[in-house]
Length: 101
Image 1 (cartoon, helix red, strand yellow):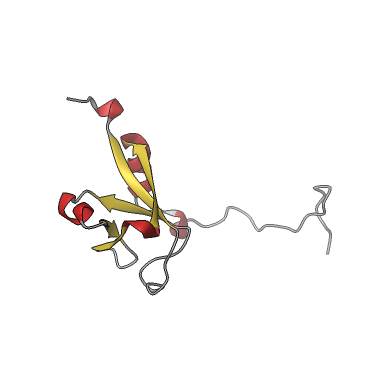
Image 2: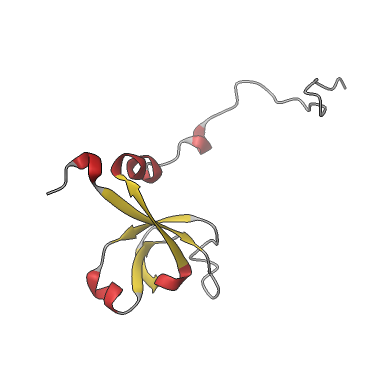
């Protein structure tokens, strides 16, 4: 038996979303649900843009194995959309100096 520190979770980066533009975004990381039966047929179960899991050809993804701690962080709901900036951003020049309007 492996301990929790050595367990891993699978994720996949979509490398081909042809025909599934509404369900998959090329270059995006997706959670993969283990499914031995699907794997026998060359498919993987992916939690896609709908939030549900569906079978897709494994060839559409570059598979990654990540430690559980990272998987937890990747799976956590993003709060970025709910944050407000603490101040207004100002344009800067290439030298890092703020431009004055």
